[in-house]
Image (cartoon, rainbow over all chains, first blue to last red; front, side):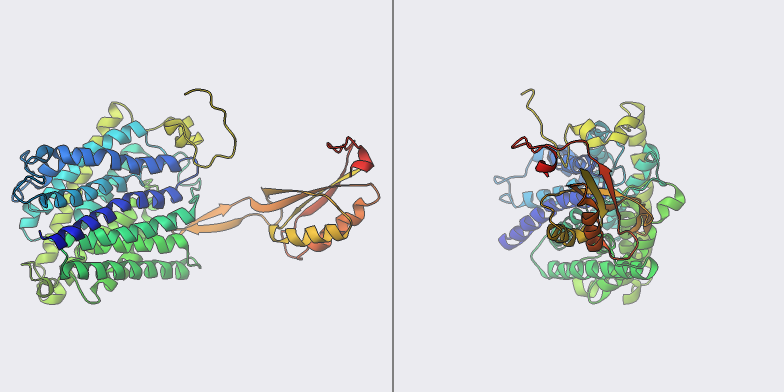
Length: 410
Length: 112
């Protein structure tokens, strides 16, 4: 890695870090006034615990050695061998930093599904368990492991991150159960302005997520940047237009949801597609996800803020789309071509296998983690806390205070 | 003495205030309130799911007045708040036992 590459990767890493607070606001605005701080803290908790777990052993098991099929080893545990005195003069740390940001946001994605009723202590333990038992192995399979070796592609984490977290969200809410009164009792967003600023931060940060995943300041990074720009716009446009036709208005939440769905969908193919492909992928993701968010009421699972409808479905659409649009002549890194570029069906089959394996493994192991937590410390807050709000009961804080308070202890 | 209470559309507040000043009123209290009448609530749509919001935001205006002035003030208020569309609100007048100006201790009619 040269100095220019290091500069871009470090810049991208900081952009990706900013996505977790952005996600917190995106989700927090959609949540209710009495639960918004709990939502923010579920996200910030990932920023507190994941970097530590990642440095201790997460990175090593997820990536060292690169060619291991299923799981790494402990050679790089405690960052052993990395640092300014190492052979690479410290540049190797850049990759650990960059991937660590992805490790932070992946469990955070799940928080939107379990909103309004998950015990914070259960979430606090769920995050590191899920990181080590689900994120780390799936990450290994896709990047260097058996799925990657077979030729499946995932540029910046469509399968490893969005499909993985999205299906985990479904497993988590099936164990956790529905919120009291759902779906007849309405839970509209308490602050659309928070949702919109969160969306802006996510889009901004996603340029680091996707273009930074080139791990170099090169043409692939530029192409990934352009693809990220176009897919988000096209998906936001598609979702907004679907709402205009179907529901009568163009809404802020529809535009924001479309933007995020487009960002999710272009993530796996950001460095493998070019030209107008990001627009087609974005349009498809915007339309499909705008209908997918309605599945939960029909199927009866309470995915509070649509992690399944946006991240799982969007990730799957984008990952399968690589099988159609992959263009190795542009990127020349020995990847397979998609159906539309004379590659035949082989790549699409590998994409389906990679996502299928991720879905089965993540769903089962996430379900087992949740069941284990349910059987031990419990996963749900009391009915009283659920009604009165998690902010005060779980965190002793109030988001929007109207009264005065006296200091009664310090 | 009378207490005139009105619930009006929020965007009409400035016109109501000017009309009351012209009618000789020199004090009013305003509160943001929510409620429903014949207008009922409204619907909002989030990600294709329709929510019915039962309570509509309104402004409550309260004015203390002499017995003889109350009816005229209420008419002035109604004239300024009227859009002739559903949801314009209501005005009601109630008897008040006593009034006191806190600063001076003046009572009843002197305190208005």
